[in-house]
Image (cartoon, rainbow, N blue to C red; front, top):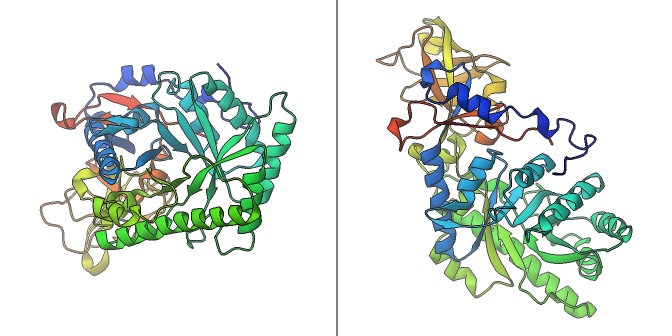
Length: 433
């Protein structure tokens, strides 16, 4: 099996903790026996969220592409791709390490994955690795797709393929900026027309479609707002496709025979997708729609604030221990408590709900943080939810993707099996780039 070059993936696959040893050590243990801070994922809730997203895509009549960046695990990927609600074989990854681990976990070989998109505009120092990944999965019918949004990326791919004994065409999405100024090219850019001509004329590229991510949709606070962001996103890729086809027609460049894929989504906008919205858009589309999303299996406070999900659907939490207590020290004479989880355990992302996290089942919140410890604060006097030194509490943080990145492994519970109070598995995430 191919091992990624150390120059490109300095941490190497061999640096991952041993899953079998971890399962042997922790399976069956009570959550109160864990060293804190500990990241806990409820597999039952995770799986149900995956099923709901498949059902959403089916109801909207679109394809679905699952982003793996939040959990970065083989186990989570399998749940994302096949559930009681549906199935897909298409994924997005953020890093080469994720891409290689999808391969080395056997997810292409067993048919779980057949379509992998590297989710950043391609850089010259990534092409060889991505080419090797494509070589590795081609025998299983797999394809590797790329994002481009600049003419130089076309040049990099053409240069690389010119040196191969058997040149091939890369399947690419053109990344569209839906005016969030996050990534991608705007259709109003003077570079858009020459980029379209270069893409469709290149002998190293086959244009698969247009891709947009509505990062601004995380500010949604209602279904109406999220639906509006989704419509804007669909309009962005659809307008790009329409303009591209017009440019090609005027230039006498052959358009692709298959419909272009219009890939849109974020967790809030994917949750907002509805049959009614799809019906409004269907007659106007210059391609076939695909939804993509990544945070939805785990969810967090940021997603709860959109009002599109409730707290029962949040699958992840961090367990910490109260290590000190400060009566009356807080605002208005309220108490404060010190816990052994800080910025590294929770990230420094805040959100509209305030603070860095909330303690489940109490009025406490993670109000202030330093590197390795956090301070629990509150707005009201302590009632029945007073805390004691040594007590463990569970906190839901603001942003699951960044929180998960801090942990070398996740403790898996399952609320559908025995109440979810003991470890049933351990997932080891893919670390590095």
